[in-house]
Image (cartoon, rainbow, N blue to C red; front, side, top):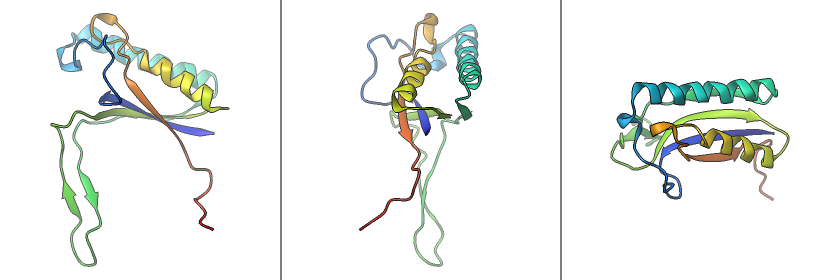
Length: 135
């Protein structure tokens, strides 16, 4: 079953007490260590046949919705001042929800400031296999 893992760089239920500094206060070596760890996670998942795709995301974004026939899309944002920031996503294909949670916990252990685990919140969402049915 496929799962989407969303990396919440900021946001999630609550920050871990060990969270010490946002990425803009890390050294280049700390950023490189973090990026290398992410590559290792992908390599490990690929080796297990569980990796599907992944991508980092820019902090900028705009909310867009349909605003009616003949009208331009309604937009709002960006919301740089909000506390939630999705830093990236990864799609995995695993045998169980427990395995998806295990992979997410490993991803959450990526090193941050001073090489300590970030404890980022990883939102795990299964893909719908079939469209919802209303009876």
